Length: 244
Image 1: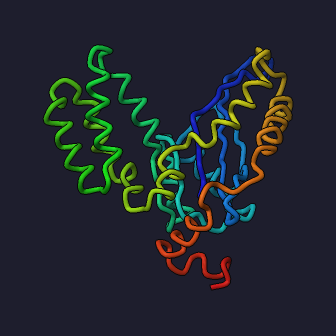
Image 2 (image 1 turned 90 degrees about the vertical axis):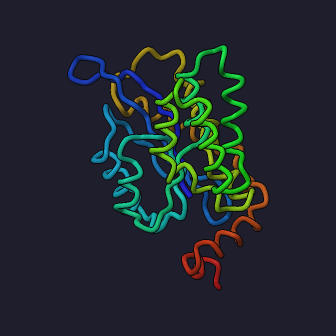
């Protein structure tokens, strides 16, 4: 499984001027249930072509299969994933979808709106979630149509996690698992206004990754059970690795 996260921007000097580049971190959970950084990428802009290059690079460096990719709503990312790893299931980060939705809700309505929205993403199954989404639209659709439209348009990739047991849901419904890495990045770069080149930035970010990895000594909670469930959901794709 892989995870992407909210981006961090840095100023990097190129041809005598500073340009803003985003850092994208790809984090995987391997068969031992441990976190592993699969890639770190810099770019001035995102899009299908950029993500296609990223996924092609991962494939060339040995990533042969991804069961579930948990990603933010980055333009072109789901399409790129499916072009290189056509069997991969894409789950959009529910937490980031909620945060983006609240940007459009008046402060006086946020508490009540969140109470109703929680019924959608905390539903026991997809059918119940869709019923609650209908209720949300009936109550708030006229006031906040852009929010309802966003949930409807992204629903296929937002709702994939409902098919799984709780242990798997916890792993894939949000990309927040990677924020510990980004905290390390910020610690090391907070006093830097800009960087003379990409390598100087990447060296610091590499140190941040090594600092974060010091805490990754144990597999995620209930990993043995989670792995056995994944082997059932993705029949045949883990047989060789698990000696089945």
